Image (cartoon, rainbow, N blue to C red; front, side, top):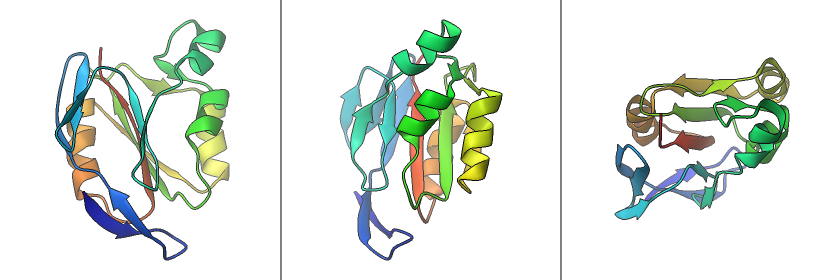
Length: 132
């Protein structure tokens, strides 16, 4: 793991994302078979895509409820891996929510988002979709 300072100046761990293929992502050598959220602390959590599915019938559109789950106080940037083919988008409500919180959203197909994550500095959280 790599270290970084949070906005508050606390030392945080930033895991390295090694690879992705359809249906999985490998983080610090651990292969994970589901979508993930990476917190400011470096903790990797399962994505709560049911929050978006309940509103849109799909996890390909991030709802405001899911945006609220993803957001962390102190976050300055959100990197979203939008799936192997870039199918995930933000709803208008989710985009507005992040904008109001002062979070820059960087949305790209998951392989590109991984490269951005591994080069990122500062208070960054991530959401990585591992299919479509």
